[in-house]
Length: 107
Image (cartoon, rainbow, N blue to C red; front, top):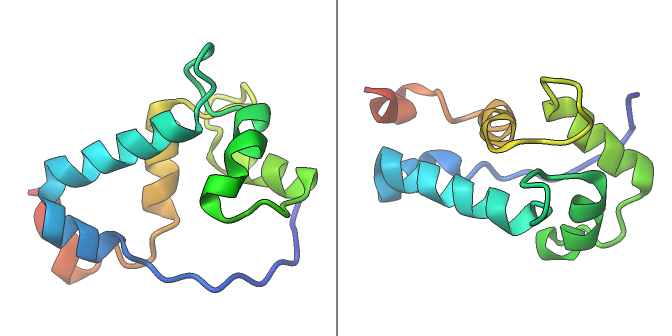
């Protein structure tokens, strides 16, 4: 499913990596995951993302857009995101994360 949505995106991840260091950046991603996850299942589900979309400034998101977001990162096909899938998705969505200036965090 492909949606025709225009979104202004400012990639702050490279500057966060520089400021927080690798461990601090990963810790912040984990905090973000915990904020969005369903507390009982330990996963980001359709319901938990819909419920918490206001935290992301996305309170007017349609259900099909939420499904599309989840399917973008759902590597194991269970319809939800675990912490690893969430972190991988965040990396994939950051166009500047692997630029030369940000590669030091990998080392």
